[in-house]
Amino acid sequence: MKQLALDIGLVTGPTLDRFFAGPNEAALRHLQLWAGEGSAEHLRSPVPTYLWGDSGSGKTHLLKAVEAALREQGARVGWMDASVHQAAEFDENWAAVLMDEVHLYTASQQHSAFNWFVNAHAHQRWVLSAGALPPADLQLREDLRTRLGWGHVFHLQVLSEPERRAVLRQEADARGIFLGDEVMDFMLNRFSRDLGSLMQLLDQLDGFALRTQRAITIPLIKAMLESE
Image (cartoon, rainbow, N blue to C red; front, side, top):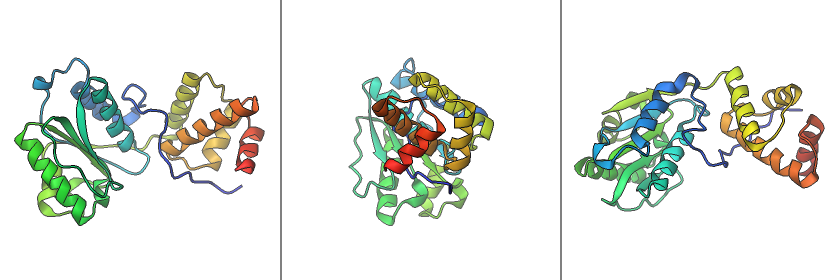
């Protein structure tokens, strides 16, 4: 069976608590301190933060987790990623501006991102952004590129295989699912090892197992693939 790539991200509600940090502990701790429920808005630092790393390193998970944490506290945020073709006007009531996939931004999106950044700075609002490259290597307009690198910059590392196994085990346990070692081996060897894709695969398997009233085994995975 050839290796399959599931080009979809997490759908199980990313949170900071459910982020397996591994080598990215410093970045996680930084975001937890900033977005923590005990962090009063007037005490939060407006210094921007930029996350960069390869696909599967957790950038989008962390941005969406911060968004969820702030919304749970009743705060509003601005969100932009490469799929947002018409960005909203900056709102001074936003607690933060979150910008994902900045390395893919078009000229129009770069214009909106720069506008958001300038207004966020003027209103002392936090900017959390993420891209695949370090600020110096981003092929963006210079005034936006330099601003993205102004503050805290964290290089996120992709988890090792043992760490990915630990994440799968943790997520499965949270769902009340038993994953045998042979099933874990099959998932890691036959599918995309991108963590978001693995989480989506687990979500699909959970749903299929519930519908068919069967335990998650290698035959069940093959049956699910054949049914699609």
